[in-house]
Image (cartoon, rainbow, N blue to C red; front, side, top):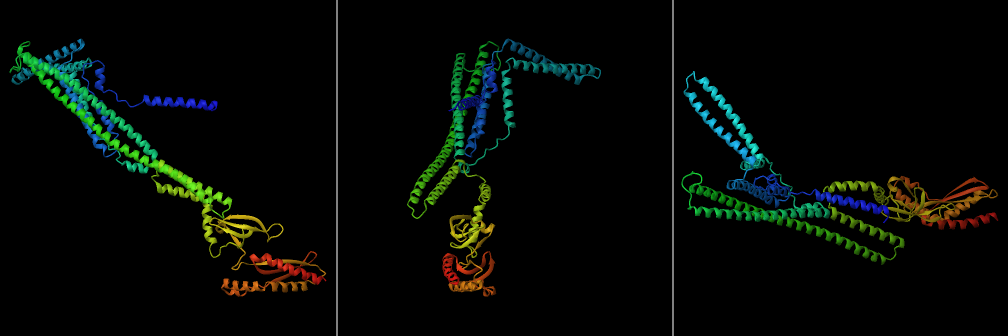
Length: 598
């Protein structure tokens, strides 16, 4: 590894560590509720844990199947009911054990009590003045009205003073009962104004896994694993809080036992009077009886809270079981996909070896063609395996018709030549097409057709710089698109007849007409049978008046040339026999010329 690569690796490692630390540092941690935080700050308000409800509401947003929704709603309802019981228990705890106020709070409370006394006195005075106003004469009413207005203003001032003092008392840690009631009212108002939770998508897991692949299934398995971890943590918290409430209940039960023992020591039942002098045995019995009633209510509320917490833990357990089933189903489908991928790879391996062995036994196939065939088959198998594995990993696209259309359009553009060549093969196989053995000219190249496949036409080229009818030994391959996009010449008729030509130069010392007549006679005799057969085939092929005028008799032309007279003879021959017939004619003409010369 080079120095730059090591440096890049170190930098990437540090960036990865920083990202992981940021993820850990920004994890979702359920913070304490407002009441818990206030209790930790040092005031005397009882701890009211709202985190249970917040946790249930957060988990409810994770429910995304019809099996989970009822359990999520039950968990939220149970947690909300337990929070209402917590508020009620806090109120009973305040009644049973009023908090000890600080000196500052005691001064504020004394100010409130003084204002309340003045308010009560002024209220009584206002009532008396109102009664006098009804009985007063017209002369006394103005003075009484002024007094009523003055007392009314004082009452408003005293109410404002009491409200302000209550706020100061709450800030100083006093008036806990009112603070709990206010928090409870805010909770109820928030619950009433909260929007109804929207149900999560309820698509089944099998449908999701069918639309997506193994990658999506693995991500879904991780999401379900995180959900199970959250549910397990919530269940553990609910069970632990239920155990803690059970310990607190035991303390309340011990306090109740002590109070009952004190009440029995004072003589049993409380006195019938509602009020008694302070410090008297009757007042002590009355206070102990009230304490017993409050502690019994606290025990009842604590029992209900314990039952709610245990029910919540049981709900989380059932929910976890449902998610565990979903996770197991996703895992099974993922394992099935993995098995398909492994089986495809194994099948590809064995199929490749089997085809190689099968092709190795083939006989009569050229070595180069065999290697090409092996390469094509191997590449095709690999492409099929890769496509299958991709479908298993990422799944079949949802808009499969659109994808197929786009892919088809792309392949049509990319494989245009092959498509046109394939269609051209049907044209070449038609009535006016070509066959193996025909002598044709395609794009300026003449030759004999030696192979006609679905996509290509192969010619054995004829003609070089010395002889236009001599094979060059070169194989020329054309795509069959020439049959549609261009044109071609087929020099072979029904019987593969063609016109061939011989050219001779006769010196000026010889009679060209006599030589021409002798040559024509020789060519006519040599090609008589071919000419007759060619005319018959042409007549049958033309099927019209044009066929009656067609003639296959040899034609001779005499024209001047450099050094003598050129005699050109055109005659009909088969394409396959043209070389043999030409050699035969040459052999016949050489003696003919030699005799004339003698």
